[in-house]
Each structure stands twice: as C-alpha cells, then as structure tokens.
Length: 322
Image (cartoon, rainbow, N blue to C red; front, top):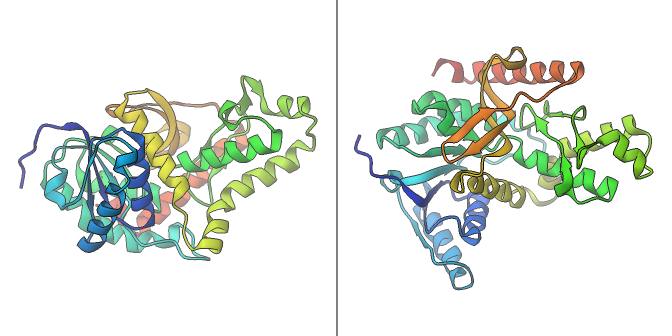
C-alpha cells in the first residue's frame, strides 16, 4: 500500500492503548487540539473500550470523533503517537526493555511505512531514545518528522521539584534535563535560572544554601521519580500524558517552542548518529532546529557518556543495523 491522503491537521492516531496510550488519548481529548482521534491496539477490544470510555466525556469537552481503528486509518493523520510496548516493571530500567520493544517496533513501523505516511511521528514508548532511533531507521521518514518525547517529562519533574525547593512557580524556572531519558540523564545546572537570575544566586536570595548538596539531591530525585512511582502504583502515565499533550500543542499550533525532545545528533558535543534529548525548536514540521545550549565541562562529559551508553545499547539491540 503506497497511496497517501491529504493530511488532516486536526487528526491524531494513538498506537498502543495501555496506561500511557489511554492517558495520553484522554489528555488530548480534553485539550481541544484535535477533532478526530483513532486508537489502534493489537487488542481491538481494548481500543474499542478506551474509545468508548473517553468518548463518554465529550459532552463536557469539545466535539471530537473518537474511534478504534487500524493502520489504514493513519494515512491522513497529522500526528501518529506510538506508546505501544512492554511496560517497565518494578526494579527494571528503561534500557532493560530495549530488546522487547525494538521487536515490537519492527512490527509497527513497517505498517506505517507501507501507508506512505506524511505526518509527524512521535515516539513515547521506552526506552524512548533507542525506539526513536529505531523508528527513524525503519520508517525512512525525514528526521525532522520523527521525534521522541525524550526528557520533556524529566524536565517538568526537574522544574516542579526545584520550584518546591525554592518556593517559586515552576513555570518561571528555565532548566533542562538532557541526554538519555533514563539513568544517565543530565541536569543542566550551569544555565539553569529563575526569570534570568542564575540558579545559585536565586537560591541565596531565597535563603537556600548548601548548593552542591541540594543539586545532587534534586537531580537524583528527578532520576528516581519513575522508579518511585512504579514501585508504588506499578506504572507511570499521567505525567507523560501531559508531556505528550505539550509536544502536540507545540506542533499543532506551530508554536516554535523549545522542548527537550529526543532527536538525531549530528556532531554537536562530539556526538553523532544517535537520538537523545536536546532542546530543539518544535513546530508544525516537527523539529526545526536543535539548540546548542552551553554546557560546562562536567555536563559535556556526562552527555558524551550518556550518548555512548545509548549507542552501545542500540548496537546490542541491532538498531544500528536497521
């Protein structure tokens, strides 16, 4: 199948109706960004049930067509969001999922490619950096149209925890988590600021001292957040659903927002041929421009190490050979 349809800017497809897919679909229904949403899952009954359940709230939201479908229904979608994959279990890292979920993507992505898909592909399933790389290799799509949710959620966690620490609105904090969405992620403290005030100076203004100790604690809390949630409730899905909504907003509204999405590296910081999270301008065409934010020496080394871990994992999973 090679025919493609004219893109419907108000249509989204969600592949995978597990916790993350269903929560993301629910968040998108409430957002008003789309007027049509198709849910696709290997368990058709599950997709039908989620579509019915979410549809029953439309009377209190905006008009929207929500239904269970199949891969033929993606051809005119502006965005395809892939959440399908094995769930992370207690005690399991995101990278532990790589073999299982690369295998699943080897089934999903060719189905998308057969439809000559012309929209944006957003990868959410974990390990998101490896799977974004896999999707890029298998789909043959231009790299700007294939992105991962990356550290958009980690960055939100970082700002929220930091906001609580400093007793300031997290929306006024400008700080990023970069690199792998996982254990080797990096909190970029060197350029973190609150309303333009460097973070350490702002800490002093708020009477918060012992900067180094607090920085380590906060970065570790961000890194451990998913594990803590999974240990308590077996899965994490509301936070990532909000991150998915945020990325969709930037694309559908052509906001040109700077978000730390997973995207392909081309030599910046000595890193190439792997996808990881770096701030990028995101708009209607997907990734418009990667932003080369300043890193101190320690952060640059940590980013290179994160990239090396991802590249080795991709190699072991056979993703580099796709």
